[in-house]
Structure formats: structure tokens, C-alpha cells
Length: 156
Image (cartoon, rainbow, N blue to C red; front, side, top):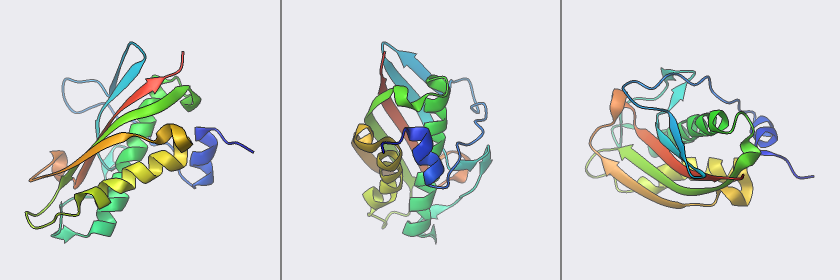
């Protein structure tokens, strides 16, 4: 039996987060001609930072992977708002951008961002397949180790 994205989230023992207002003069998402541009999402749990630090010291790659999954869950929360709580309206994820705050010698950045990519595939199935970039940076907002943004296409 095929499941919709909301059912897959439940089967993964996850729940969509309570979305907080963005910190700053910006929107959480913007819809333009069938595309949803989701602003960078942090690893927040109901609006509270769950992970801080840079990958490589003191944050492990495994912990950062989990932080990327949580940031991705916040992206999905924004997509739920954009689709009026009907994630089946997401036709496909087009592009995922992953930023990882890390030490200069940490180079396994794609493995961290896989946390987001893996969750998107688990929730959206083949519609979650996407183009992506993963880049290491020296710092991210609020001291988090990962930030994820997405461009998605909606069904009419």
C-alpha cells in the first residue's frame, strides 16, 4: 500500500515541528510560479536549537547527520505550510543546499548533508530525489552545525 508523505512521517516516528517565525526580515518560504523556495532551516526542535558547535570539534559526523535530518524536518514543516498541510502537493524536490559549519580539516561534508537527503527520500519517495550541493563554512546562525534549504515544485 502506498503511503502519502504525512503517513511516512508518522511511520518514521517523527512529527512535523512547530514552525517558528524566521529570525529577521524574511519569509520561511516563498511560492513563485509553482516553485517553493524554502529559506535555510536550522536543526531546531519546536523552535529551540537542539545542536550547536562545529563538525570535527566538538560535533561528530554522526551527530551532524542527525542535525541535518532535523533541519530537513523543519524544511518539510515549511513545505507543509506552503501546501496547506497537504505534502502530496509536492511534485518533486528540485534542489537541496546544505551548509555545514566545520573545522578546516573536516572534509566529509556530503556525508553530513546525507542526513537531509536521506530523510527527503524516506518521506517523499522518488519525488524526493534532488540535485544538491554541500559546502563547509566557518560558522552558521545561532552556532548550529547544519543549515538546509530547498527548492521544490508543486502540483497544480
